[in-house]
Amino acid sequence: MNQLSVPHLDGNVLAGPLADVFAVDPTTAWHRCPTCRMPSSIGELHVYGTGPGPGLTGRCPGCADLALRAVAQPGHLWLQIGNGAGAFRFPLPHSAR
Image 1 (cartoon, rainbow, N blue to C red):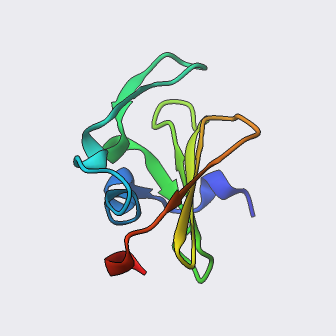
Image 2 (cartoon, rainbow, N blue to C red):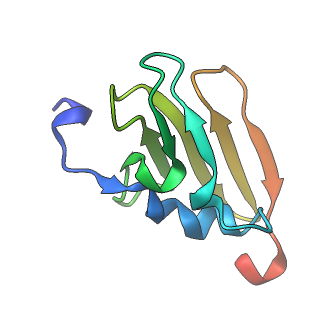
Image 3 (cartoon, rainbow, N blue to C red):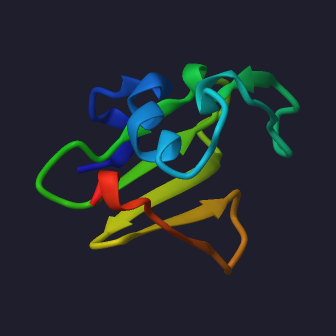
């Protein structure tokens, strides 16, 4: 099944995982899509991946280009920004584990 035909959530579902590593409300951060140039906040992204898997994928609401991926791992959060090959690994505070 094509991922883009699956119903999506809005980017506010990323607030929990990202709040564990950022001191500010992450859903207010802005992103400009490199493909369609549409500006949007993280809260406006179309997010996929609420099943049993640990990760969430946020896509541009204009063209569905990849904006970010957040993957939880015991004690850590992996964050990939855009289509880059690398990812950031953030240690989670003990209260979030």
